[in-house]
Image (cartoon, rainbow over the protein chains, first blue to last red):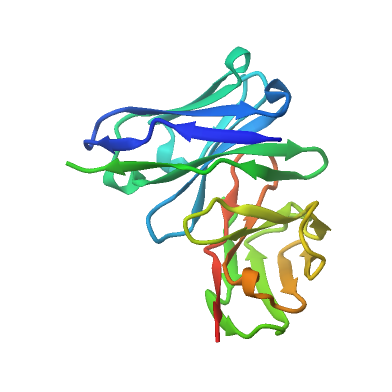
Length: 120
Length: 108
């Protein structure tokens, strides 16, 4: 059974850093691209970042470029999101998701999410 | 960046109704379009990928259509468990992806 379990969320002050983790199991983690998606309270979904299988390719939504870094450790079956210079507008539930890539790309499994609150 | 516009933003319907949600892309995305269902406090769930392919385990009352810029999610006969918010997402190219703003399906 595919499982994705996020952790690392919490309360952080504006300008501070936070690192999210996503532990993957039930599939060959190193064979899949992975993604982070967030959802601000009461708002819609926002795609945040993607990373390829070996970590050599990343992409980000414009609002987090230069502040967030997606990475992975295939030996530990783990995905990460390093978030720096956090702003109030980064407050959201952050989901990790597995990307199916063939002729079409889509997010087929999601974690339960971890809440990040940026506030003084 | 490609913008995705969903309509309506919300709708009221009854059990048994046929429900249609539309999603329009700001440029052609071929069939790089997915639909997700989200219930309060839960993670999104994949319903449709490639604009019209039903994800395994998803009831056949859900269907998708469209290509290019205009897409539709249809629920042929709304069930109690279908009251939720639905999102489209474009995944054209592997660089930057976007979601529609969501459509909340409420009980009439």
